[in-house]
View 1: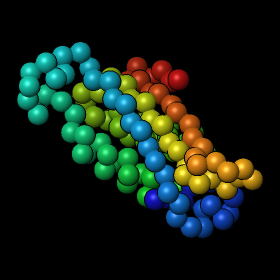
View 2: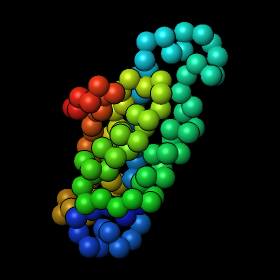
View 3: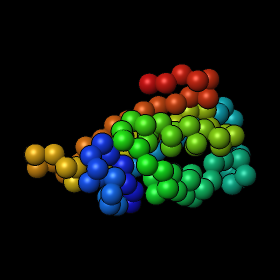
View 4: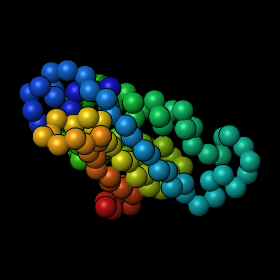
Amino acid sequence: MGSHGVLAEERSQLQPFELDIDLTLVDGAGDVDAIDDTVDYGRVAEKAAQIVRQSSHHLLESLAGEVAEALLEEPLLDSVTVAVRKLRPPVPLDLASAGVRTTRRRDGQRT
């Protein structure tokens, strides 16, 4: 739940959001079957949820970018793709969701 959107009504009340996060590990991460050799997915999920709850963005693109940049702080990640969907967006059509997807790489490239 978060308060993101261009319209004042979107920013004045909590709305449901859904995120898909795809992580690409650096070479060698996970080669050994040990928890210390990979990314803590619980920490990743909590960090993303905290950003959705505590920040406020006009654009989903900006929200997805903030989440991606924050997740790249994990040392074993080479890149991260974040898809953000606003469930029940305030548009004059019957849409279940509207969303964006962005990818950030440790080398600074964006897609």
